[in-house]
Length: 330
Image (cartoon, rainbow, N blue to C red):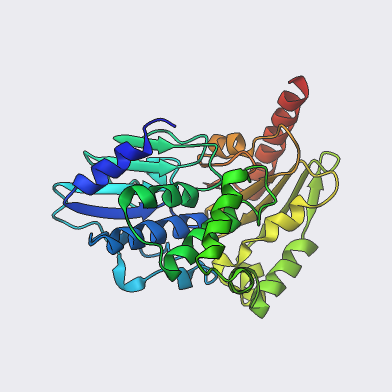
């Protein structure tokens, strides 16, 4: 860990003004760790507004975790002496403020991505942690805060989504200890599973059907991908954020080394967002994502690109081949 968690806690407790935020297009761990730290700080009498900019609202499966009356849409104009706490954000450019301005004087960077760029004044980066929510769970005792029902649900959501429901290799003993603690505190495992993974809209199922029908496999099946253009979303009557989970179906196909879902977002159809998953030991999709301008974990990563579809496919084929060559030489 770059800097101690206690150092970050001390700085947070010494700061008069806080602003919490996470990465763009937040997932379960991003929203879970963001809400949990906010609630813990509120429980000790601290104001800790959460910055979620327009266009970065979480998907419907996570929106129930956000106390929306505590969300701000812009960085306050009077930002002097403002301590920004970044959660689950691998690089500053992926944060809401990183897209519009240079880094402020003081940033606490709390994350578990192994490729984190250490952009903070204080960098608490633990690549051995299962999720950023796990780091927030550790912080709670240091801060002296409470874990109420919403906090426990947020922490559990971050845990189960980033460990793939305890199936990914990042699932260590502390992840299970954390789960046990949260269940003892009243988290309803079945209700959380249903809230996040079931109650699926018909349009999301239709989009999944389209994605699987459009499956393409390259290089003896090492790369399995699907491409979802705007017509796919319109025909399925599906929202942009309903692609989560599709890539895992591709990842499960026998022989796949890397699975990819390429989609065209509504707000910028000329851009394409790519979600990646690794299915083979030694393959690091975060390296592929970084080559495309993004980042993530060894097993799960993503990036955005202005490349045309065919160019993007060739880029992925080349990067997957390089990964397999490197893995074979180890």
